[in-house]
Figure 1 (cartoon, rainbow, N blue to C red):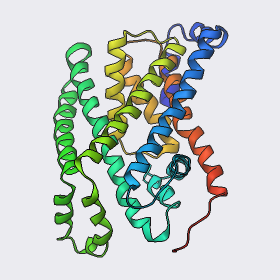
Figure 2: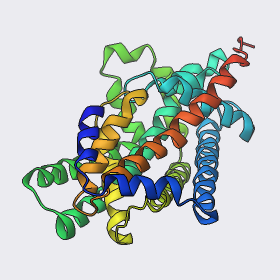
Figure 3: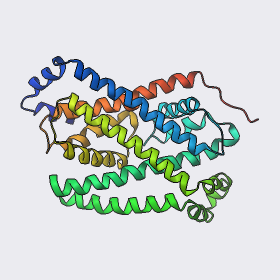
Length: 300
């Protein structure tokens, strides 16, 4: 994947000139843009910590800082697991032993909400992309499957109790049914709160990607960039991967959808790499520090 990205960057006609401009033309405006992206990274994970507190309401009480530690620990564990499923394990390490299985259940609810937001806005971006930018038969297939998947996700999210009844017929889940009962505690108001915070996170990293594109001299009309970003985020969400190796897939996906809009392949890939480093790798490194000083709770 990395070799493929390298070859595509080499084909850029003005590559050396673009790299020279990016590396040498640093001024206060560019430094401010980078500072804003870093600040938004903090905002992003603080919103996720607030969401995690709402999910844990009635299970265990965390301060916002404790919640943030739990979230970043989850990020640290997630980078070496497929599709970041290790995030569940990392987060529940901060819970008391009696609450750990319930913690997995509420973590899944938060992930559901984030996936719904990503899917719905990705669907909007996909429709825009097909109509105004580029059309192909496989995009129609993606459109139909995205509509079906988003419909199922929304139905399950707002009918968690029915989903719980369905699990009663699965023998392997009967033993943990008592821990799944926690989903009945979530009222519509709480589910909408979680969705709203998921939307806020989504808008934060949409803005981050836009700022990084500007920083890397990728000139794309704003409306085209925003809708294509949403499509890229959705495409990356449904592709199986391991977070530590995501950069290749992220770079290829971003390049595939944005190359009809800009020939600055180096800028597109660099923006994608920076977004990955800032939003995932830096928080994961901070989370590692929390792992070293963490206390594993005993039952009380």
